[in-house]
Image 1 (cartoon, rainbow over the protein chains, first blue to last red):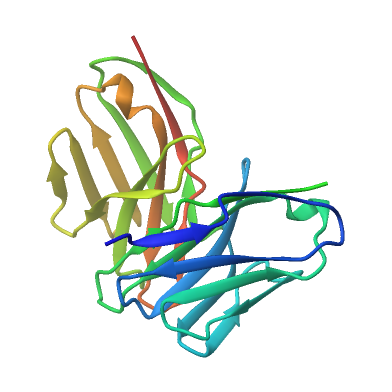
Image 2: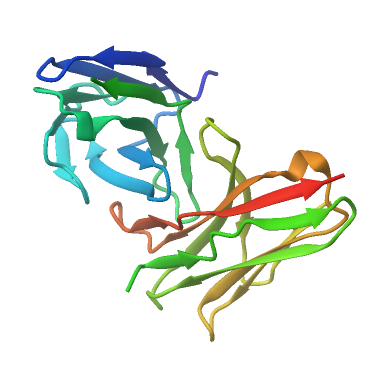
Length: 113
Length: 110
């Protein structure tokens, strides 16, 4: 039982390049989230999904797109990377129980030059 | 006003000390509360849930004060390994209503 996994762990991009971050969970959770974490800023929600085939915008969605084609996977895309997107990206999943909480993947460190 | 607020610290304490953090939340309808621990360059990991009746796990005690809208985390007999950032999280049980504090940094020194 791996929980939440993320690939890649590290990536360096040049401005304007694109990439996709993959998040996978094996807990059969309905809800999945993408956050970014910057020094002194805490976790900021980018996009989230409440189920297969559905996505919605979070607090800081600009410059990102997401897809949830399969329940266990949640993809985050950067179409044209900018230096302001240099950050650590965390994926999380959450069950539907009233006391469920979010479980995080190990993160992806992205640097945009 | 932020949904969840924490003192960023750092709290610098000697080994063996008792230290407490508070976290205030703004939505009185919030239903679930949690403390996470985050080590440097790692993901947040669930430390403990916070129940209305309080919750104790070894040296850690979490409490909820609904009237004043805050949760607390008490660490007794601090260890060097407790050094980390502690995030509180509040859930109003809507899928997009899960809020994290920015974290409180704890440094336990020999």
